[in-house]
Amino acid sequence: MATVTAELAGEYLNLVDGQWVGARNDEWIPVESPRDRQTIARVPRGGEKDVADAVNAAGRAFPGWRDTAPRARGRLLQQIADALEPHVERIARIISLENGNALRTQSRGEVNFAIDVFRYFGSVAGEVKGETIPLNATVLDYSRREPLGVVGAITPWNAPVQLAVMKIASALAAGNTLVLKAAEDAPLAVLEIAKIADKFLPRGVLNVIVGYGTEAGEALITHPDVRKLSFTGSTAVGSRVMAAAADRILPVSLELGGKNPQIVYPDANEDWVAQGTITGMRFVRQGQSCTAGSRLFVHRSILDSFVDKVTTNLAKLKVGDPLDEESDIGAIVNKKQFDRVCGYIDDGLQRTNTTAAVGGLPPTNGPLSEGYYVEPTVIVGVENEWRIAQEEIFGPVMCVIPWEDEDDVIRMANDTHYGLSAFIWTHDIGRALRAAHSIEAGWVQVNQGGGQVLGQSYGGYKRSGIGREFSLEGMIESFTQRKHVSIDTTR
Ligand code: NAD
Image (cartoon, rainbow, N blue to C red):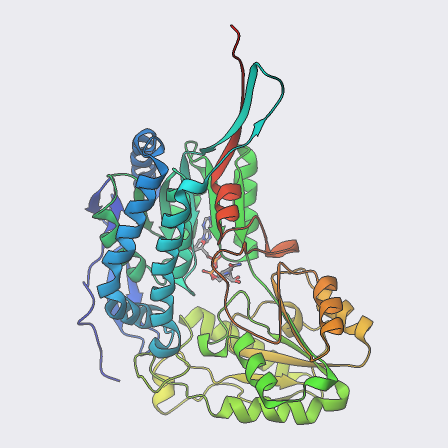
């Protein structure tokens, strides 16, 4: 594969107090493209001092930003959205280069979605309202929603722009200032977004630091002047973020992992359902999605025929160079994750009576061996208690588990520490609603497998998280605090 670096700056810097700066210790992190394992850029290896500079800048910027009229803040976010429009293609290509997501099926949509997010939060910034209570004729009793102060936000690499912009736009619309620790594996497109946003925002309102989780991340979650932690990533790190927040009684929002069920009823043995389960599994993002429906519960009476439909449809999807318009599916983000996914496939296929209906371990020669490519893999004969059915693989691996009794399949669907999303496939709407209401998950889809809906609060049950973002209500809940004011007007 030819190396494509024309759209990259080569060397990227952190955004601190309106300035573009390297790490104070002058150390760097190389960014490798999973499409061909070439180093494409370097980013600062931010640490404690860089985070302190950023938090101090955000703290200085806070009073001015808090006191800016909410609609004026919203207008700036809308201007950022407009300014991003001409850069969709360039930024989308950068995402594909750095995290391996296919340009056509993923990255373009991701940047367009991020623009929508700036527009949405820009338009609702003036809707952060309080309440009044008619106590009596002389007392004015009301509540107001105030921003929290400096927000520390931490994001992962799988949809780097969407997840970062969700936090930037909602925290800023509510009047907070922000220090974002971008994922070290895919920081470039986020920094490109920050370059454009920075042209419109007062200095220090948005600060972006790149660095490792154990260095910059730890510094941010333990910094005494941060007033709120908003984290998206794994459940293990989410738990660490919550422990750090407990020391200072900080509010947290945690959007964490998932091992999400898809339930196919016997009346849904149809081609569009098979295609829907493929979408639900997020195979076109290499399964690297927290909402991936990676446990496919198929009624035993249709098992073979339904799995055939899934494999026939999966065979039509092309795995290849993420920048190639013909590729439906790109590459796994890095070697560590690639080895992890291969380990799970190996483990699953070593079990007695399991088979790969499609996929399996990746090729060791040919063009796909030049990058971290794994074919979509469907493992049949899995039991819900096994490791591959319980742990989040975060790769293109779907486990098929047969069921016969509805109560039993709901029990299995809920038999997981996670509770992020679920998918129900049936024409019987009564059955679908019974299942949707019985499943312990923050988001259930019936007969569709699409992505999150902007404006609808999103988040997980159980160890998939705490708090909701993605909506006006989520923004108010996550990024403001309530103050009660009571005035005796006769004095
Ligand atoms: P991760 O938890 O390893 O890392 C996420 C971020 O946390 C990165 O920026 C990382 O540098 C940082 N980090 C790591 N250790 C830290 C520490 N000790 N202190 C502070 N920060 C630290 O996750 P990942 O591998 O980047 O992403 C995949 C995970 O994210 C999956 O579990 C996936 O389900 C989850 N995810 C959840 C959602 C959601 O909306 N619920 C969305 C996307 C991804």
